[in-house]
Length: 154
Image (cartoon, rainbow, N blue to C red):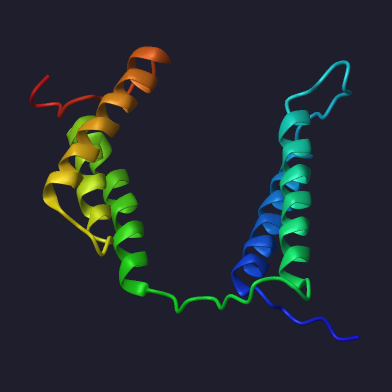
């Protein structure tokens, strides 16, 4: 009996989950795993990686079922991928000189250009909300030493 991939999206997703899960589990073995009674720093990432790989195997197996809904993998949209990856690279370049506030706004506005339903009002609202959440969580909640504003502002 020959297995046919009925749902290509789930098949590729399952492969990605398995690869990431096994990669994290393998990376965690560089740390002391310990035991379940006395966990080391690698214990949680190791088991979480294996759990992710198991979820990937379930998703992959579901894509091979004869009654799985057929779904083809869409064509790769390089323009959208470029906007999103470019916005992350831009954020990394702007964080030190411009601070978290301006770099995060640039990240959201540039990555919003990838959407087919792009609108300035929604993008600005998303940027403001994300900025408030990130400042509250990382700067004030966790106390990370991130520059909030450009150095010339103070």
